[in-house]
Amino acid sequence: MSSSERKRLCNKVLDVMVACMVEARRAVETVQEALEEAITERCNNKGVLLECDGAIDGRALVLNDVLAATWSLILFTDAAGIEECEVELASLQNHVTGAALQSTKDLVVLYGQAVVVKELMTEIMHQIAEDTVTKLAPGDHYKPPLRALEKIVTDPHHLSSTNTGHGAQTLLDVLKYTFICSGMDRVADVTAAFDISPFICVVKVEDRMLSRSWANSWRDLLIFFYHKNDPARHICCAQVVHERMSCVKDPLSGSNRSSRRIMRELSKSE
Image (tube, rainbow, N blue to C red; front, side):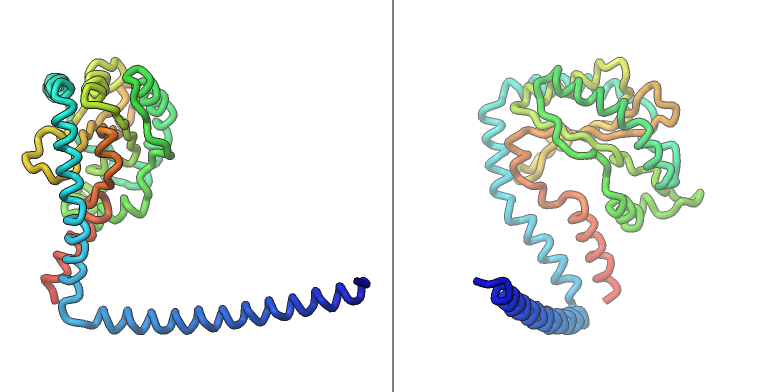
């Protein structure tokens, strides 16, 4: 094939590609217009907010049996580890001290504090994971800023940055580390590591693992703490979870809880 023939063939291929792209763009625009029209019509329907709230609830119910079965398996295979965990958790809770509030109401300042303390805190978290033979979940460990803003807007405890509200003070998980444990004995080891650490001061413990009375729920342990040498006392969060439970996504975590709260409040005004 001569160079001129090759050039003509390339031009034909290019023409076909351009024509396909134009047709694809028209199709996208048509679909987009239809979607926008459908969304607008749907949002104008009476009761749509309650229906959305129900859909979110339904998503959570789907995993109830899985969560119940997972916890039953842990109870059956990890009885000794659970007893050990109860002992270590009681000890840690007895040593909780200080207020579970950040030192600033300003969200920007709060993220600045997290950046300053992150390197030091991450080193300690990796050391705890190594000492307890657990896995520290990867990631940059920062809470997405949009999620932080969402919590401030939708949670009445965050209300405002004025003297009448906590602002960002109750955001205790801007810097968060997740420990994935192979068994309840490892959960106990991580709990003990936070209890005896010379660098850490624990201000709050949320036992969402052993204290929950219903089987079909997500379970983990949340430990809130700051570094004793941090002048800002920026509170960080450690989530401790059994690896069997970590395989099941918490259906009511994070933005899902906020979505439920938003739908519930908005539906009252319909």
